[in-house]
Length: 413
Ligand code: FAD
Image (tube, rainbow, N blue to C red; front, side):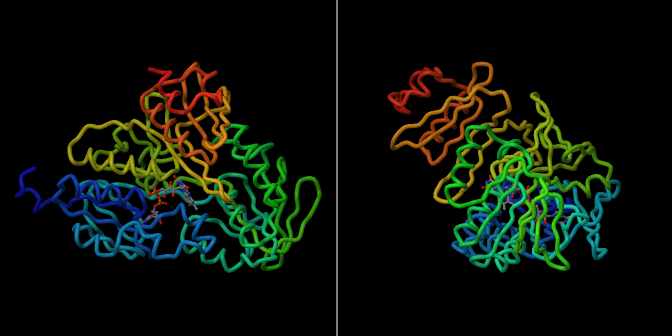
């Protein structure tokens, strides 16, 4: 684009100063984008990492300064205007502006919606608004929760997903009594296979969590503050605080109000384009229409990959999203690393090798589609290479402890 046209170019405005929004800004500047780049974030903090919130930051091992994704001087150095503590209230599509909550209007040529997700709330009618009931998304949520995590207190965790499990592990490590309830018959039912779920259930029980599967919450009790929980089997326990980990909802309010197509997220094509020209979406809030069907992921890898994709396409590329999903979770001393996406019905091959760790390999229609590595970082790295190359080793060799990982790769060639 000739330099002269930049004078009139309102540039790219990014709503949401999280992992995806920051990646858009960074990739634009790396790619030589010369027009203005503005990043608007509703939280007071500059862009920061969320994964440590339910891990090291909750434990107190990671300080606030180590959460930041960039040093403060990075923004000026890269000519990125960062405005925090400001909420975009409305998108004006025809005039290509946004209106902030305080009434200020800002122009854009490209608009990127990177508004993330918010925790699914526990309904107020069953005690979701009582003091001592916490959800986990932002740094400030953890600051409030930490004040309640007093050794000896009893924490109830509602929901056996990653956030609930990480909160349970951190609370046990901090010396709390922990009861974790999950309404499904097993943990992580939406996201991983039964072998991994059972292994994690055993790990939590061994670490003293009172894990109740197939257990429904009826309601929380308390006058102002939560004091008890009542379950579907009629039992009732005293509790001092509660973490609600029942999933997240894509933050689509702005997009819906602007009449952009939404269905479990803001619908975008494989290039990150919404239903309106010049408006893009990336990260947790976006559902990509891909050849294998719609895909919305909540992970750092997805936020970075889709943020970079949108920026490259704003710069004039014509790239389609080719997801290479990966994820991790830290619970007690174990790092769980996941490559690929498993689904119910996949065959599972267990690989358990002394000195290497345990890994679960998912096979669908004869093809390797995902691997869960439980304290097995080398197996995870091998799996990522195989998945990227579209290779599947013979299943009897995967599960054979006498076949070294290196040979596993060789069996495919
Ligand atoms: P976000 O990081 O949520 O950023 C969106 C931002 O937009 C928010 O700051 C929000 O306030 C802002 N916003 C929303 N609406 C507006 C508006 N109208 N105006 C202005 N600003 C607005 N992923 C992993 O891969 N591994 C992990 O181990 C892992 N652990 C996690 C632990 C926790 C506790 C949480 C909460 C998430 C974890 N994740 C993990 C998921 C990962 O952090 C998210 O997928 C990632 O942060 C998504 O980035 P994002 O930019 O799409 O959204």
